[in-house]
Amino acid sequence: MRGSEPRQGDPLLNDQTKQTTIAMNLKHLTLIALTVLTLSPFRSPAGPPTPPPAPAPAPAKTEVDAYAAGQVTVSPFASYRTHEFGRYNGKFGAGLALSYSATRNLSIELETLGERFDSDDWIQSLTEAGANFKFYVPLKHGFAPYALLGYTRNLDEDQNRMNAGAGLEWRVSRHLAAFADGRWTHDFRDVGHVLFRLGGSIRF
Image (cartoon, rainbow, N blue to C red):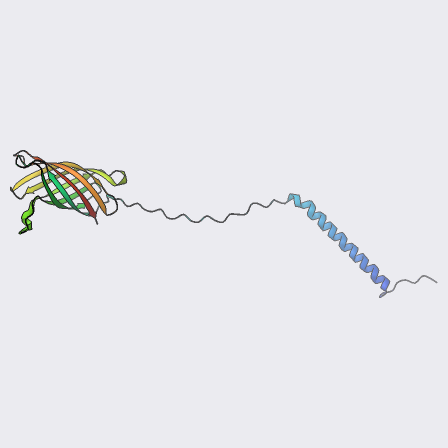
């Protein structure tokens, strides 16, 4: 009698089939693992992490030109007159000037000055009134030397006078400034005099 062959559904045949399947699966997994290990040295190394984008820089502040054209300036000041045509020697006063910046380097100034005070009629306190051209040379930090050329009407003596001088202005901020200047005043007939001014300004 021939040996009996395993038939379909036989437990022995099922065990052999399972063992064969497991062996093939292990072989496939081994091949995959070897392939991965073999190719891994050729992979590009991972780079450093990408940093987050830098924040956008804040917009630069636009610096305001302290001597820009179109500004209106009100300037109260104190004055000292060193010599008044041979009659006065050292006379203090106070005044007010109003100026307009026609360009960055040129201002037109109207001024009035008093050297006495009349409580009954304040208009009689005014000694002179006039107009000046001021030629600026702006420097750093708000400083600017300037030349002064103008005309003054002396209200006490009804005289016309020409003024020529120089000064220095410091524009501390956008609206505030301080200045000092001196001028030679002459009516082309008598001996002239020197007038000094020291004051502050408010600009609009």
